[in-house]
Length: 175
Image 1 (cartoon, helix red, strand yellow):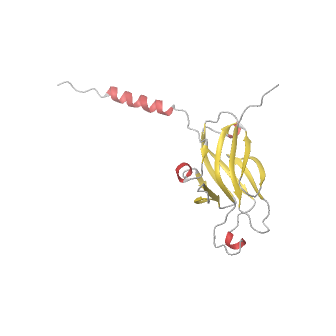
Image 2 (spheres, helix red, strand yellow):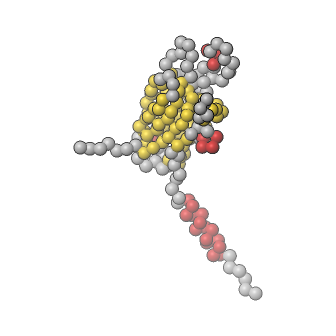
Image 3 (cartoon, helix red, strand yellow):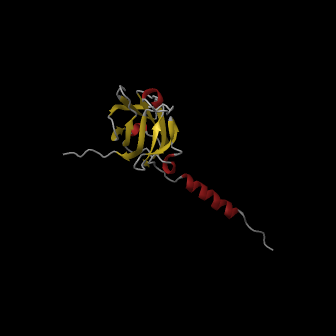
């Protein structure tokens, strides 16, 4: 009986491992802020998943700082867009959201009442290949029970998020 050569199978396994390491990084393009698409991406400062009256999923940022992790190939400038609405109460100050990518401050925007879409252009230099942190900082986070008569919700809420997307920024057309 001839002994089996196991070296070819080891070579094949090593080649498969090497090729898998060369695969391009998957990119996060869209988070629907639901358990199916966002559970592992919401890294800090978020409440549980909820539904609107229209059965649309969303999640509250329940702190003055909330972070989400997305994957990127770090190719080109990116556009970060999201749909959100601030927690408001009688006499509430303007809620302002400031966006950071991997610690680099992008910009701030005052959030209007009601659900709106906001967009931030972000430079390629802030993105890295693999996991990237998008951080939101807000003016306030307040408990509805302390601010809205008859409300018993003890969580601190700042902004509700419906979805977030990261898209390649389109180059400006010349001429």
